[in-house]
Image (cartoon, rainbow, N blue to C red):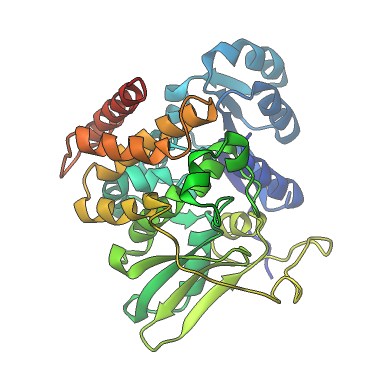
Length: 390
């Protein structure tokens, strides 16, 4: 196999779970990748360590209060530094990288992803909220850009892999798997008493706090259904979620002839990240890397999700039916509610209640511009915050 040209990448959110695993792969594949830009939210010490190891042209910290420490550590090494969300977005225009790994969590990933697409950069998309919030806008931008999107979420990477060599017209439906999270067997009464510690105890995956809570409420599956619609041009009614507790099958595609293709792997993000970085081609892993074996495949079970206990899942279909700013409202309210739950200010089941109530109070815009998404996000956050004070 011919070694690819050494690719320079930007890692937006380098100190999070996806970002650190991306840099693991860069370190393993020095002949294939080098780093042009690293950005982080507030973990300045880790960002400095990463920059010292990978020597990007630039490093950016979103938290401006941490900037002096970043500058003093890196500028003597010839690494340019900056701070703030706008600096991050503006950096997407830089010529010293061709692919952006969007590894941030939440709405904050939208603006830099849009700018990267406008600049013609390829996107290794781990920030699902970009397509959840503004899928219609992203699709329009891609029509006039040379950018290509490679999904990093394990579910969407699995679908992407299953569709290789297949006709779009042959697809019957997409089947997105869910672990069921830590509360798969909990009763409604038990869920009322669920603690933050309980919700962060994911059975299979090691993820950041926000996405782990989203898994517990199953709103992450709602977001993944929305994202799958925009990535693969399949109507929402033909995208289904199924609970698969072992997290070995990452997603499936059913075809018109009744055949089902599935992508299997260990519950680990290195494979989908590698697949995106190598632009949908397969490169060998080190002999010491763990592989899926017969033992892990000995028992694969499936069950329908309980939408009575986990009503957030149904929000996907409402968002895809209404389009416009509905998903933007859902995402903003959820981000506010999850943050409050992690601080111990609300109960677990209040998350869904706040999202539903915010949807009822924020005006829907059918054909939004980018400025409309920004305004709707701000308004939904304000409404959700006010609801928690009552």
